[in-house]
Length: 480
Image (tube, rainbow, N blue to C red; front, side, top):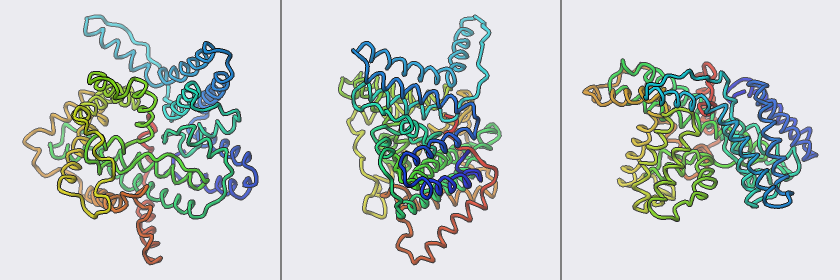
């Protein structure tokens, strides 16, 4: 089941009504309803995926308790590594086995040795990277004695599988989400309205902007040999806005949906394309994943406390691992390494924390310096996204080579309807620029307008979503 589907449009109000009008007298019943609803939501893709989710949930629940109750460090360590090994093992088998097998065979080919590779013909379970990271952080926090294990299985299972975040995040922490699950929730009208507003904005970004960009990005990337350099640039720009509006749109819908049930999820995006340097970009892009790698990988490796070599090593590790987390392809690894290279000058000059506040805070327009920083950072991001989108390294390099030709300065060869998508990109950017100091672009936009004008604006967004919604397009991050 995907957010931009008729199925979800029926599913959500049914769960909402049952949650607030049938089970509202009992916190236990509310949590059971959330768990059953979440399992139904997930099983809608493939019931077999649900068995893996349930096994992973029970494994981390059980090992967490055994770690805490163990007699001696030896047994704590045993249960800890059992959970880590099984979780990482699932990821390795489902997501990375074929990549390693084929890469190893390719390496042997370079030495004149031909081997037959046995690959697995299996489907990658939706959201496995996300719910596995939920479990890993929980188990690590118990092992490090930051938290105590949750002994109510229903509460823990809701933490792992709460349907708004189940398949594409944000990646939650037990310290943030579990207390909300265990606390009595009372319906808050203003919170629910705010949730609906964020859902509306997320759907607009996904259906109108991201899916519109996808049409032209796919057309250009899939036929890159037939297009001019300027058109290839536009293809990369279309994908740049596709992936942002697709993923941040998902996050907006997830956060807004959670608010309907009285739960606040971690923020996942904070206007990354308004960043003035690449360090700021990564503080604002996929925040829950970036902070996860910071807390559970970068800091344990030594962070930035060591010498220059250690800082460089740790930075490359975290970016390359982040790239590899996205998919089993050399393009993702190169994308991660490229962003590490982007980050190096800032880190070595200790200027990676220069831009902590939102750009042009309290002002209408950025300074010339801020604008220049935003443009340069955006160009760097666009170039990096070419590797992320390409089918393989050969495709990526040929695409880049095709850009730098005499045709780079010709008028892009785009269908006339592409102008409508470009209009909506600028429309989205204007809304988000105006609302950049808020949690999401539409949070305060139009609140002080005369009520009929505000509802006319909301109606415009709804009409755009309905008219431009064609075939249901899955969210990009479902594949990760």
